[in-house]
Image (cartoon, rainbow, N blue to C red):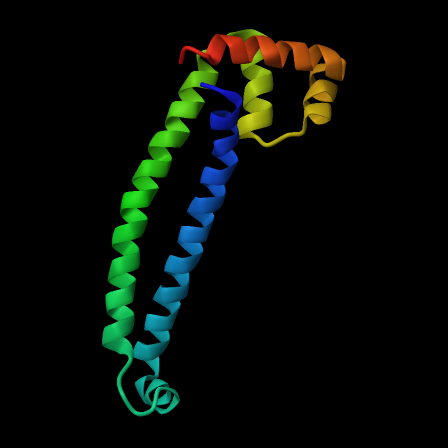
Length: 131
């Protein structure tokens, strides 16, 4: 596992949030149509938009389920690799890549200089290469 793969953890979290936001948007839109169908017909030139919205919601739910499964697998793989490290290396890699702390913050919390944390990071990356 390399540095770029570890960095993907943050991108995975962002994509999950985006998928959840889009799913929520379509759920809310469907809910508004069900609660006030006449109002929605006026806004949409007289036709009933609910079937189209429900189709879109079904599509989003399917895509979300598939993609969420893939993203969770990637996250678990990264977490297991990091958790396979020992001691301080595991703590600093988890703090930076999973908990999203900056390197200066990690160094401060561990009571080490930034340079020493950088050396420990490089050492941990070497150990993760074969994972």
